[in-house]
Image 1 (cartoon, helix red, strand yellow):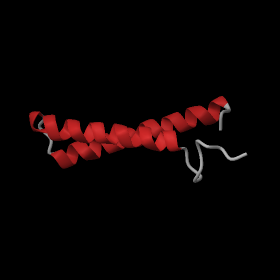
Image 2 (image 1 turned 60 degrees about the horizontal axis):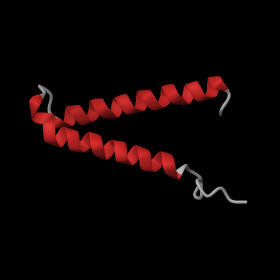
Image 3 (image 1 turned 90 degrees about the vertical axis):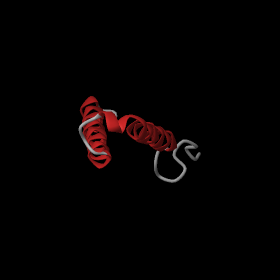
Image 4 (image 1 turned 180 degrees about the vertical axis):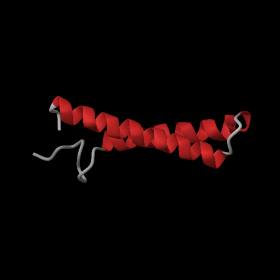
Length: 68
């Protein structure tokens, strides 16, 4: 039986959640970015780096826990 949550080889729920989170961060940077001492580009870079680090740490946690 086909996994309905993974029809194309990737988890649809994870992709949609990540896209939504990215859009929320982008909207926050557009709305409140001028209140920081960094440029919008720098804020996008920092937030992207944070997402990458969180994703790697979560992936390592899943591997160590035996879920992957």
